Length: 370
Image (cartoon, rainbow, N blue to C red; front, side, top):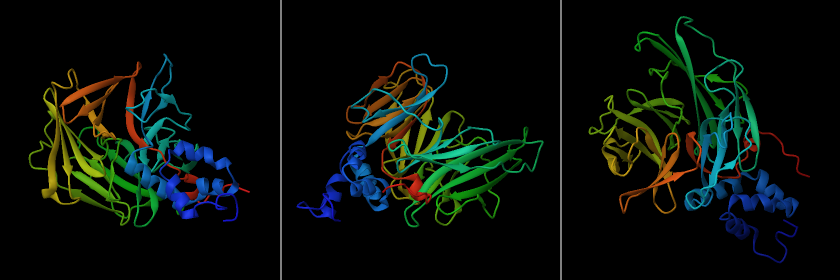
């Protein structure tokens, strides 16, 4: 380094360590200091990883993204509530699409269409830097024209192989018999694949009605059908995870979601008119390590039909989303709930941590930095 960054100053490594703790929006402004700073804060994957690790540890760049209609707009928009709950002002985001599929390391996977295969385009977008790439998504052939067809996507990263992958699950299901279905899968690896690679074997799960939010834990994506099943992004294999015996997993009176809190695999069990129980798998893959970690009673959340946790705040409060109007802050110490209302309905909410991770760098697209 031969410019102002290193002359008569701290060693370069010390500078990187210090600035990695700063808010990511401040780092974006630092790009104009010099060409070296611009390269460091735009295309350096090592610093992007360092900054991401610091953000996860300190939660300094955490926010909640919500999809809703503000000020009577006819169409839905994507908003960011930065540093929630310290701030509660939704900020409009200019995104290539509003259909959120998944979030990983500060990147958001978006779809131009939520349910239709035809003419679908996927986008990997960093809302902090504004960068995005588009991924072709050609329709899959229909094997059973008389059956209904549904496509689900999930997005994740595996640290051991340093790769981001998108998995596509296509399920053709009988209109009358849920046991009659055919599910196949394919994978797209950012920076490596130019086409979707089909998985070798059919998938033994009916994915027609699985949820859109897919948690990533220990390099594996997780879904809930009649069982909890996962897809390891390194080995590209499916596995099943047993749920706690005390969870009424297939009881129609209990809404069970699989999720993630603090990097751990969780189950969110909503017992209608009673409470929400949050179960945490303390040691990943060890069935005996399931623990009932929290209970949010109905007395604390009145009139609620559907609400589920999003994340844990810097102060240790659990942030929950209740459709279609509110975010809730559950204080474990006082067993109380604080309600946050933004004055307009929103239909989806996700936890987000901002980063400098560049989708263009991952995909091998050159930046024009001179």
